Image (tube, rainbow, N blue to C red; front, side, top):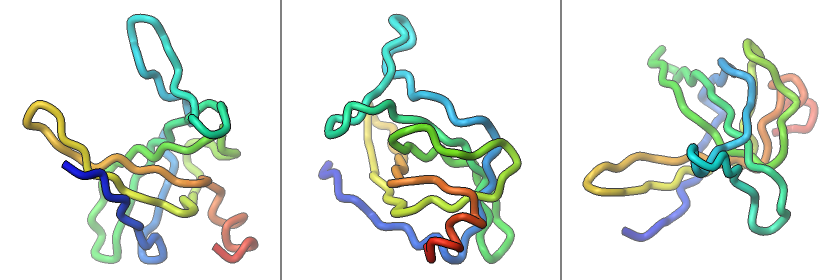
Amino acid sequence: MRNIPIPVDVSRLQFICVKAPCPRVINRDTGEIKTDKASGQTVYEVLCSVEDAFGKIELVKVGVVGEPPISPGDQVTPVGLIGYVWELSGRWGIAYRASAVLPAAAAEVRGV
């Protein structure tokens, strides 16, 4: 399966941080933490509830380089959100990555 990035329009979605951002663990046995290949910085996972215009709510994990300045309960905006479809041993899903995850008020000030 080709790994084609799919841009996500976040303008009609509401994101709420439900758990404090934490470093993404690659190997639970060794405790190895994922780092960004380009910058060498730690990749963090942000667990968010996402509500669409119809009231449907889902939990999604968003990967972001560097620790975002957010806390549980904050309304947030993922900047440059991209989805990647993955498949492994007959299972599949969508992994999400953003260039930043900001408090919603800060994102509005930046015009995101």
